[in-house]
Length: 139
Image (cartoon, rainbow, N blue to C red; front, side):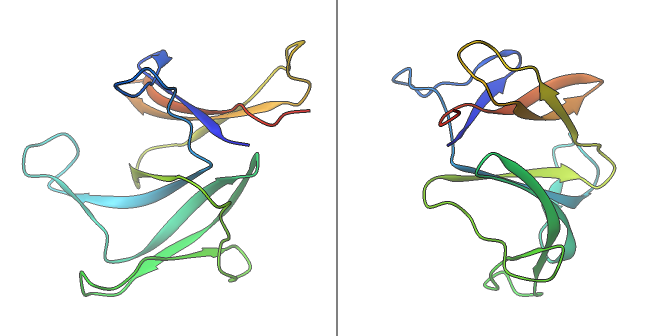
């Protein structure tokens, strides 16, 4: 199972035309120093915050944390404090500002997909920028 990526309303594909479709998506809520969209802005990845995990067609929530050194590894934990497990394969990490709302919409199933798909969207000026839709392995 993987998550198809849509960017600005169109399928996000590689330079060779292959659909971007990671196995896992992690959404980290972070503080952007100097604001969002400014030339001098950057995501502060030291400290801790909340996270959403999209793995095996499911969404769960938890936390992320990282020590003060840039060499410290980011730790992902589930809501009950256990290490968040990912499916082997490609994992994408989305960095959302702590003030941005993550919208998850249950899509209706189609004739070719009997399960309900999930979508995570990032918004800019009220318009969706990117979304990840559960796509493969549905039965």
